[in-house]
Image (cartoon, rainbow, N blue to C red; front, side, top):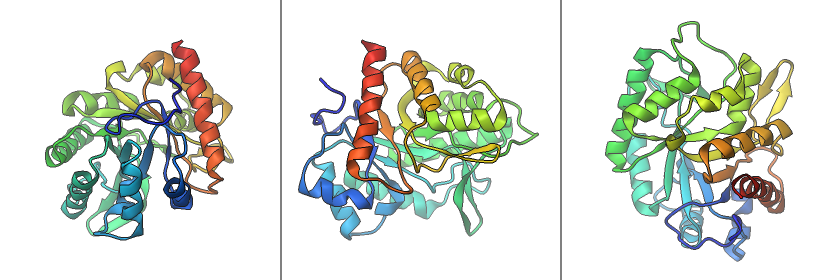
Length: 281
């Protein structure tokens, strides 16, 4: 069966999917584009009703859906935002998604929330804190979540381990899974000067349950994870390496800025499907 064929089991993600964005709502309401599954940003659907939630419920009846959070801030030093977690729990119970994921980062302190996914120092103290928060989320939602590696543009001198050793320990100690963003691995490898292939070896095979693919841009000596273009050739190469290491893990094309027509997203997903199929043939 093609990895882009019409989904059968609506309770599990398989093959390659795309992120559902408002610009493509009508495509999915009027027809059933051939994609393996759909992922949405959880916070966009926290309301009690409205058009966005209506669309999500409609597509959930046709496709497996993953909820991908961007604002829970599991790395914040002052604890999780209980109101945010409560809204996420309500959405999970309403939609019954196949997967729920969050980012390995912090984004809030006190009453202030920053519109960014900010990196952590990879210390034992931060590890204890993140593991505690991930466990709290899983206990509240009564399900395993996935935690995603983020792109970053600085490193902390205080770090006591690599980003990927830290992520592996979070998964081991909390029982969560890993959402491996291959574009972020590549972006960080260029920005911080490490071997991305070696980074993949630091992550336990059994922990990876989803892969993200996206585009990036260049700004001087930095790569910026902007989700605004096609997947770059070196990221495709790293994705092939990830396929060989982690097996046929569900993958997703993310595109959030300068959003193209739906057929462009589906074309990127088709490339991912072909690479995965060829790797696992």
